[in-house]
Image 1 (tube, helix red, strand yellow):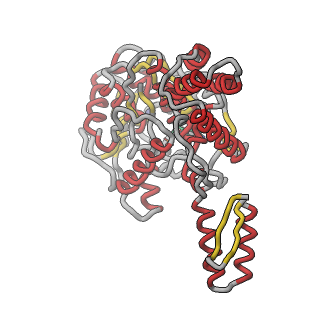
Image 2 (cartoon, rainbow, N blue to C red):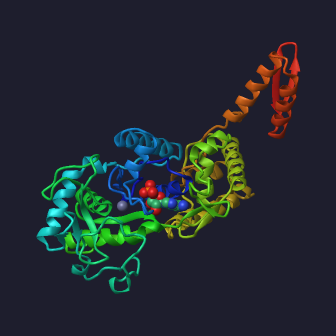
Image 3 (tube, rainbow, N blue to C red):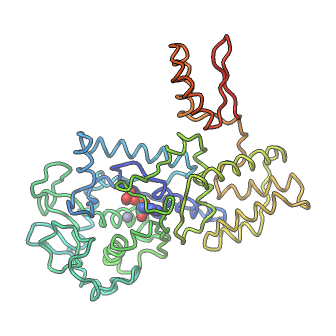
Length: 431
Ligand code: AMP
Ligand code: ZN
């Protein structure tokens, strides 16, 4: 399996995480069916150009914004990515190759495309893929070459040296760029984004990928171009199955920096929600459907998740697993996770299934669902935000700032925390 990884110039938002979770769910479902999975996920730390007018490398733009080195940006957000995956119980891929550490491999792949007459050197010094040399272009997205008009959004604005508007760069000439550039047979420059996934997937999965995963926006042009490159090299269909996860909206809107509604996993944690309540919410929807997430649905997931864990504890401590046909059928039928979750709700309420078997069925399902159903729930911790308010109030009281102290008490009360004062100081309980 191959899953397109993050471009490490910022934290992944919950939408990106939906796509990364999709790869994990597929891998776990395949494992449940008795097969082995070898999953590769790349780290894009160079060459992913921004689609806006600047057409800048996302890494360099962010390095400028944070006044630091682009490699420092890459390492910082790569670390954040792994932390998010771990908090979401995503089983690590077998390898996370970095683009910047695979330059030789990409150069060798481009040389192979030259030999096979799919690549040419443009008059701007960049190397391009000759889309018209590949007859099957458009099979994944339906975007056939004759229907593609010049001036598309996906065209990197500085690609002036190509022969045909739908061609794309494999190696970009450095031009005036001085950072994140490497020597190549075509002079200093840097690799294109699409060639990264072709080079890595073919090399690390022996020229044949069974399942290739990404978000729906990657279907075109990223995967369409990748397919052309990979098939041009192998001479056959290199990927058996392209799986695209639909996008996640938040409270009805596309998440974007400009709209100010980008939600991170860290935001859930700060609100005192179990990060796995995100996983829970995502499981309640089919990956093929667009999904709208909200704070209300996350809170509901948090509550149900805690209830299930308490139930499992009450049902015993056996580690037995009981294969439930309805659950395995749901998961192995195009990953119908909502149906598996529904089945668990029926099992929970059943008067016919014994406590031991209920627990064993939940544990069986959790091999794929991955929501830590066997975790013993502690008393719910308070969120860092509430902790801070409690501290502020305690300080206000010590400083005899009664106005602030009353205001903070009311604010805490609206968050469900009741504060009481005594000779020993302030104490609190849940409303
Ligand atoms: P990026 O880090 O921008 O390269 O994106 C990482 C992955 O997240 C890609 O597979 C995208 O298709 C996917 N993605 C981006 N936005 C969303 C969204 N709102 N919902 C689900 N997946 C998304
Ligand atoms: Zn990719």
